[in-house]
Length: 266
Length: 80
Figure 1: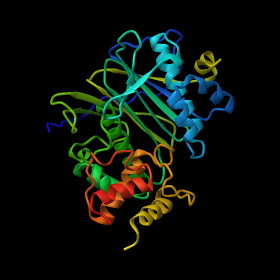
Figure 2: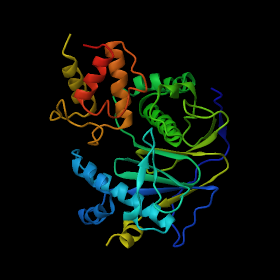
Figure 3: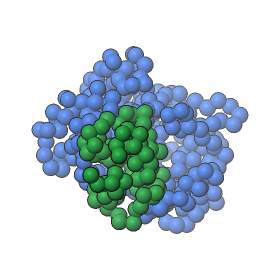
């Protein structure tokens, strides 16, 4: 398969910043937005009209406790973020999904090179945005998953399983989540789902390690290179972003409903 | 052997969702009850329980979106 994994020397950016008023996305950058989802009903009501009819129906069908609020908040924020880069209105954006379910913008009048990925877990969402670079982000709230060792046995490589076997307790579970988020972020960047082919390549499970992968995974083209970078979040959450190429700069923005959100909600 | 549908439902109620209100037709993924990690856990359990291999191309979110759908998937793989 030609998979190649290496641990890069640099670490992860330590903090999330408020975005500048004039925000530019350069081709050598990956922007990740951290969006808190614990928002009051008034904000949810203001976001709801920004969603498409299909998204509104999906939100109304969600039955799990708080799932509807989190869905509206994360998808509303995604629209506002993308609209900001595009200079468009959030409610005008349209999305399509490719054959594997990966969403992309359906630009009405011009070709947009903007790529994005959204993930949410617990009371947080992350939205990664690039210009012309395939990207995937995955976020997980660390939680009790009864079958996590069985999952690791199927989806982690022998090297990764060996690392996990040497660990116990919370450290083992946290390390499992590091691996899962990195593999899922990479898979989302490729446009794949969860796959048993994940066991055929390795990512670093160290908390702050950056991994480069070349040609790994069932749909990866030979020689196609990606960089996986863990994201620092508050305790209890683990996340990673994967983007095509190497040497790109990661910029992490903190979403504030009082500023970015309020400006776009009538 | 216990009914396949009830085996799946019991596993979900005991290990994944821990909510006795879910039924055979409750949407699991589209309703936000089950995420990809939990779906992988359900798949691992079913493969061990029934000694089968569920191919990636059949393990779609739709195929795992309810106990009914999961049962249909298992039936397709020869589990009765």
